[in-house]
Image (cartoon, rainbow, N blue to C red; front, side, top):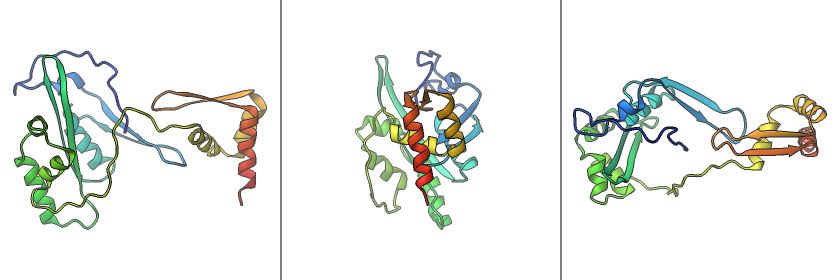
Length: 208
């Protein structure tokens, strides 16, 4: 998942709870999520912002657009010098989940200490998940390093172009000396020569 703020310098007074007024900074609008796959066109889901609070609106998106009931808990620890730490956890209902398990998670989400309080105390990602799970048993399967980067590659661009089909690629090769593709996430530009586009046509023709 990649994301960033276009206008990161927003300054607003604290809200009625004495917290940063995230909802006031976000304002009204829509949450648009684009999911890309190895092949085929990206899937775009759009929901209206309900509150402006990021965790609440992400939960609404997951429930409305993906039809997955989810609990989203996010927190940002800040002081006058800036952001000290940020983190969160998401719990999603798997097929066949029991109603009593879902009820336990809902109660635990309402009762557990605030995410920022846990982060401030040094909670790890595993500790945050355990805090939300309560007495529900957890199984750890995989870890991913988090960094601000994009997974786009030249090969992925070629795979996307293959989805255009032989006729469209032939038209591009005949009309243009080079073809430019721009990653919809990081905006990196890839330029493919006419010969490269022609080779893609050959790959399509070689398929059974």
